[in-house]
Image (cartoon, rainbow, N blue to C red; front, side, top):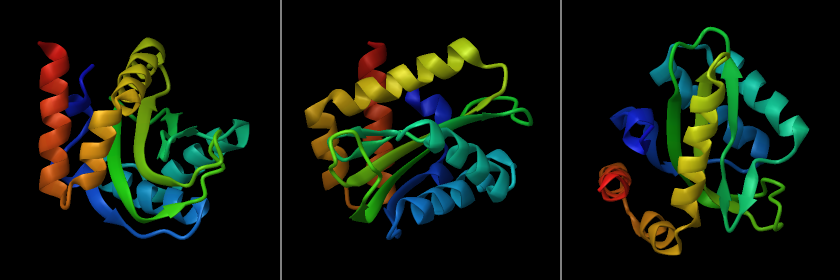
Length: 154
């Protein structure tokens, strides 16, 4: 599973406005609804249920909200940068400015875990995070995400 398999042009966002974790999840759910076909409410509920288990703010300004839904037939991703960092209750108490939302079918055990691992590896690369934060528009972000994927495949 490659990052580019999870993203579409509509699912890469360079300027999301949110002032709270809840609002951030609502904005991400609305965007994920456009690419997945699920209602934004169904997606928001899945994300909120997962956040109740513990924060998906993994540290260093990054969060990976994720969840499973029975009406999905494949994995979907949404990458977003926030205009202003948001308190995501991250493990290191830093506010979050980049998010990769992942949605998976209910029965996607191994694929879901592999995708989470791939996303996590991407965010552990300090150079990649620096480049993503410096990108000014959706197109620049898409190019970085696709180039990173192609470099990993080589």
